[in-house]
Image 1 (spheres, rainbow, N blue to C red):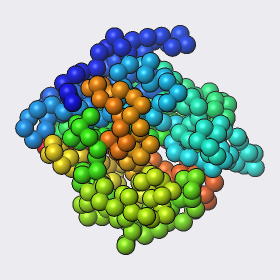
Image 2: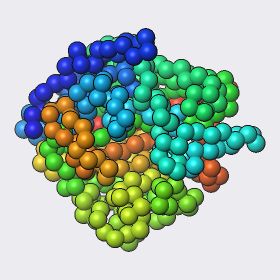
Image 3: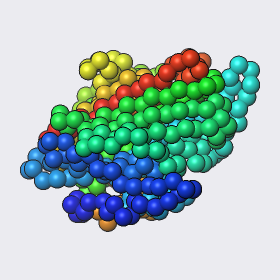
Length: 354
């Protein structure tokens, strides 16, 4: 493992369908550094000091834009949309009309389609030392979704060691929308091994159980006496391989938790995570009603990460702040309908300390 191999800008400079891609670096006054590419609006690397003051890259990323273009893409660090997570059988209805999306996670649609927001070049509309503002116009009918959708995403680093992500979107036609960032974290450092000994606390009392295709049944389930109960600090791997039907369906944790039990910073407090080796801690806050906990169950050593290591199973975890999976087909879930007269706004904070 070598956490001091910084991304090489040249590897992110190319031309895709007439649009230029590049590497962008943000840095706060504490030495925290974040690297992004406008291809997929991706977080490529995130460096911060551990308990000994040594820089550690705490997110998983690939070494070039070309690597992100491969069919085996696992959404590393990308903006995901129009609809993050799954939609059952790729269909949903609005005002009596049925829309069909690509089935890219059989038998369902996943993360916006075959070429969702993670496979497009975002326009850089502002870039300075501590913020990067991106824009993308998703045209009516793209990936099967109705309406021209204008999306703005702003990444910022604060001097409180916060990585903030602000989303804003507007449509000219009634549509559905669910945006998130798909960063994989390893607080001990990219390539340092599995995340199973990370300590996790989730500020949620319920989750949405799923069927064998990872579509929610539509009900909320309490956490008491289940391996999904992270209300007290618990190692991620403590119960991950228990023979519980829900863990078998997700091949581990790949489930949406229902937020709202705890509020801080005017938002839902999502989680606290501690790296067992590095001493790095991460607190997560969001305006979203849910968070998808994913423990890298399908990583298989296919990709080479920034530091030169392979992305083996469970070497990263995700806390994807979002609305619930399959919300357009679940009337009891918070709505993901965006009206033409409305402006969608969402805000998430990942705050770090050591």
